[in-house]
Image (tube, rainbow, N blue to C red):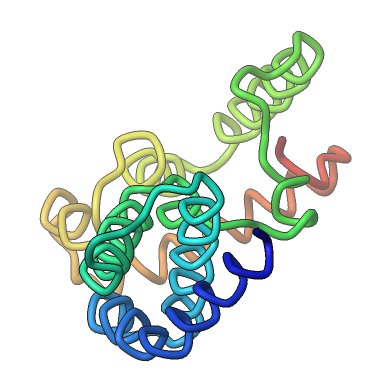
Length: 175
C-alpha cells in the first residue's frame, strides 16, 4: 500500500512541481517563498493520498492548494512581522515601566527642569519651544522674529550649556 502511495506521489511531483512552483512564484516573486509553498503543497498531497481518497484531477487540486497557501502566507503573522534577532527583542521595553524606572525618570526630569530654570532667558525660550512645545525651527524663527539659521545656532548653544550643567551635576544619561 505504501509503495503505491509513494509511486503516485512521485508521479504527481515529477509532473506538477514546476507548475505549482510557478503559481507560488507568480504570487510572491520570491524563489524561496515559492519553494516553501511547493513543499507544503506536496506535503498536503501526501496526506491526501494516505487517506485513500482518489483525486479526480490532481493537477487542479495541487494548483488550488498552492494558490490558497500563497494567499494564506500573505495573511500570516509571520509574513507581516517576521522574526527579530535576540538582541533586538531584548531591547524591546515592556508595556509599562516598573515603579523604580518611573521614579528615576521623574527625578531626572525634575533635575533637568531646575537646571533649565537656571539657564538664560533666551536659552529657556528656545529649548521650551523646541522640546516642550515641539515647534519646528521655522515656527520658532517666526515666533521670535529671527532667521532659521539663528534658531539652529541658539538651539545648539543652549543644548551645549544645558549639557555642561547636567554633567556638572552628575547627570550622564536621561532615562
